[in-house]
Image 1 (spheres, rainbow, N blue to C red):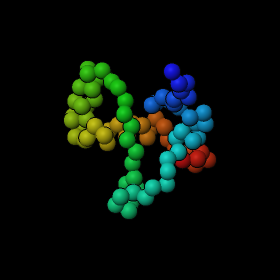
Image 2 (cartoon, one colour; image 1 turned 90 degrees about the horizontal axis):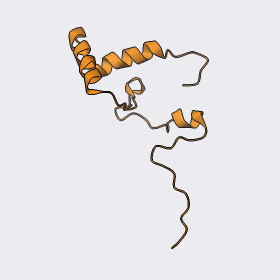
Image 3 (cartoon, rainbow, N blue to C red; image 1 turned 60 degrees about the horizontal axis):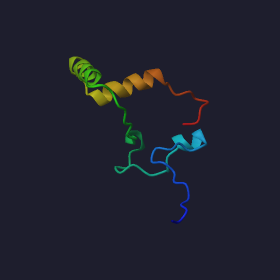
Image 4 (tube, rainbow, N blue to C red; image 1 turned 180 degrees about the vertical axis):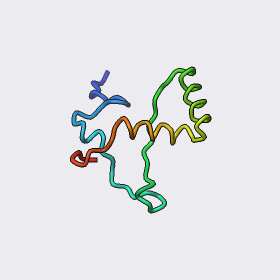
Length: 83
């Protein structure tokens, strides 16, 4: 039996948090930097998912836009922080 080197797990975090949050400088497909986005996946209960969808519908906006606004309010950009 051969000895295998330790494998890095699929969702293993890098040791350096700054490296973890940075992405490669890839130009957006349509050329507009303001439209560039990154996908974020979270697990929620079916009940919470339903409540989120109903809230977005009542506000007349998409779930994605509602959650982007919520996250922007909760985590405002600070001019001194690297982004």
